[in-house]
Image 1 (cartoon, rainbow, N blue to C red):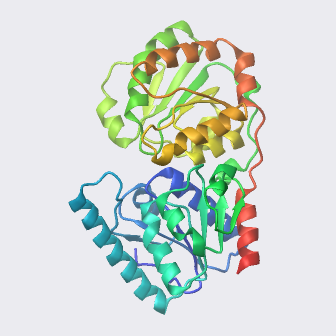
Image 2 (cartoon, rainbow, N blue to C red):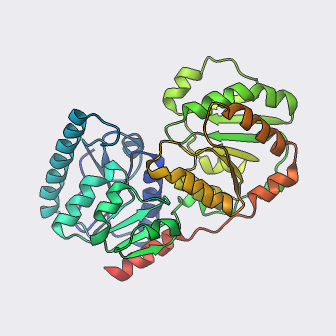
Image 3 (tube, rainbow, N blue to C red):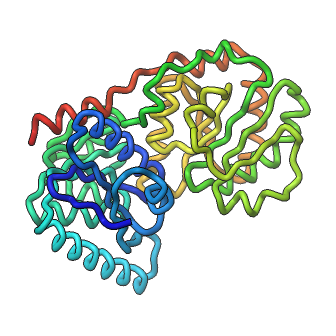
Amino acid sequence: MLPPDFTQALVLTGGGTGGHFFPAVALAEGARARWPERTVAFVGAQRGIEARRLPESPWPHLLLDVEGFLGRSPLRAARSAWKLWRATSHLKGLWRQQRPWAVIGTGGYGAAPALLAARSLGIPYFLHESNAAPGALIRLVAPKARRVWCGLEAAQARLQGSASLVVGTPVRRAFLRPFRPLDVLEPPFRLLVLGGSGGARAINEAILEIGAPLLETFPDWEILQQTGSAEFTRLGERPRHARHRLVPFLERVDEAMEEASIIISRSGASTCAELAAAGRGAILIPLPTAAQGHQLMNARALAEAGHAVIELQGPDLPARLLARCRSLMADPEARLHLAGAPVPNRAVEACLDDLAERI
């Protein structure tokens, strides 16, 4: 696909993981509905979730050769810095000829070239930070952003000196519809397992270990487990119960959540916002290597609202998950209490209202 014409376009940038990419998609959907005459385009990286999702989407896009810095050796970090400089220089040259209307960044290394180019050229840019602990890129470019929209108040407290506003985390249009109440679901009840867009080995292994004992004890239940593409290949031949189904990726996660009575998941900010919008309770297992412990903070925020319980990753995770699942699967009232009512999500509307006022 040829790169889009960015002239007076609204550019969305963010990726690497679903937690950065899906809020950008939600904002793009809202912008296209609000300003149908304006081009809405994406800039991202040639790896990560955007590299898989954008080519099959209707969104005009440009994918650049950049990669992350975290956890890399000095030599690979130097190579990453060179790629970032080259990608940013390329984008600056392009945008001097095709100047965008505004840029919205939702984080992740794939957003770096577009945000750095916008800052350098004086193009208005806005940021959305979904997590409780802002990422390194957001902290770097926040001081000159027209606005930093925060998903949680904890993030705003960490962005002193920037023009910040708490709006919640944008969810895709599929999550803005009414969801069926939990108490109308009928057998077979579903335990839905989401390791994140890239999967999660620790969660996958734990569920494969406890799946058969759970399903033998509860014959009116089934398990649907999203493994991630790489993990699906590794786990596909492993023995499991007949009512335990593995899939590499769920295209309509909103429908999967609606059919679920219990959800086990990582605690990325997007997932937490989607759980609240769907009115579903969850057992959250924060990614222990998440930068600044932001997944644990996200999980705590949802748990404090009464809609999640937290299990920390560790050697005894299978035993703890088994006990937690048995308790919830045996108690419909506990499941209803954990789920609560769906929480209306107005984050997209709030962000775009604010953008329109500040340009």
